[in-house]
Length: 172
Ligand code: PGA
Image 1 (cartoon, protein in one colour):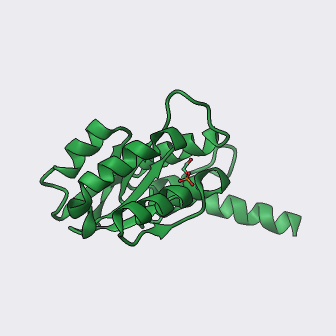
Image 2: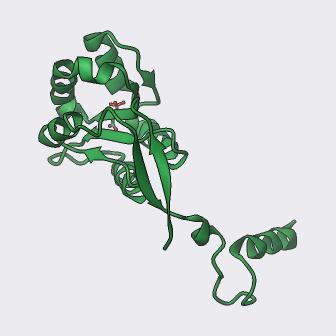
């Protein structure tokens, strides 16, 4: 599959999310790295964002709380290239009511090839990388080919969009 490049500027768009048992870890980590984080644009799920704003005194773009849609909002922003970096301290020892959303968020981060740190050691290595404060061209598969793929059973030359449009007109 061909690739395209998505430019990541020196000021990155970072999403921060922590499950309840991991919020302490994230607050400690972010407090220690406050200066390094300061010039980036920060996003967070609702409760994580409230905590970080309070503890760090920095402005954070807060989304819904994770279990009521925040994880999915972050996933959508990743797909729209509005978030290019994810710090996600998820809890490996406790099932979450929104486990499908957690999995979906991690999946989209991989689909769009954004850096993900799921624990403090990974976050330490990433935040201290020399790539963090420079331009970086992220390689992403060109999903245009997926959107316009041929659909089995359809006319050989028709694209998926044409098949969908025809189905829509039949049900209108
Ligand atoms: P919260 O959501 O920051 O609103 O607690 C985090 C999550 O559970 O995804």
